[in-house]
Image (cartoon, rainbow, N blue to C red; front, side, top):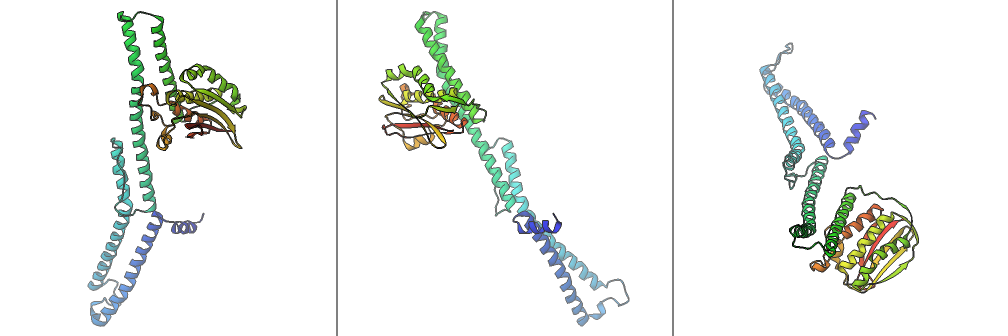
Length: 362
């Protein structure tokens, strides 16, 4: 590209480049006009009022008056140039200094530091400030989430570990007799820990973008039947009457992950839904497949539904120890749906409760 075209493109643009070009051009034009017009005014005045103060026509050296004019013009031009440069430098350096100061504070651990400018900065500087503040906000949010996750994980692991420690200590001290019932209860706690660790692994892999799936042709009805067989007794004991409405037979998905998602949805039903009718259905549209689990109550408020798929979020009945879960089940469902390039959401169900949907493309 030709230099003239480059300058024209910079001039037509906005921001720092245009500001520098226009400032330098105006400065040069101002000084040239000042010298030319000032010279005409100076020599006209001197010829009229003090012609003897001018140098002789055959002299190469300026007279003292002319030396004074040259010095005054130079100093005035230099003053104008310094003034323009200071104003331009202030507009450029003020936001940069603000970003540099905030960056040092962030490096020292103050993630609440934000950059700003007293006056409207140039476009490039404004974009720099905006990008830096967005980065600082993200770092602060990641830090807060990390602290929350550490506390939440420690809280979830504490209960089963405490139970296991107490019962094993009792076995070691001879307080508890080594009976099959005790070993069964210990096994239940270990299985709960294993599920919690697997849920944490899936959610962590999904958030880092490393959750891998193995797509294949699957008989969805058979996969649903496998999960229901494993949960049938628990559902019946809680008083749930399961209804199947299978409109989709074959689909492409990861069968292991889809079974995990359905199992998590059924465990959520066992923890939070009221006994009654439970409908599991599948459907297919022009571009998506859908798996639904619907219960008959008590349902979710709109505020709860908006965040129910976040990790360690529990429903309104979670204060009751009987309905308390890990808070990871629905986060696992969303992670699996996202790994399939799909979505997971919930809405009110015609049955009177909540309808959870997992959608993924064909």
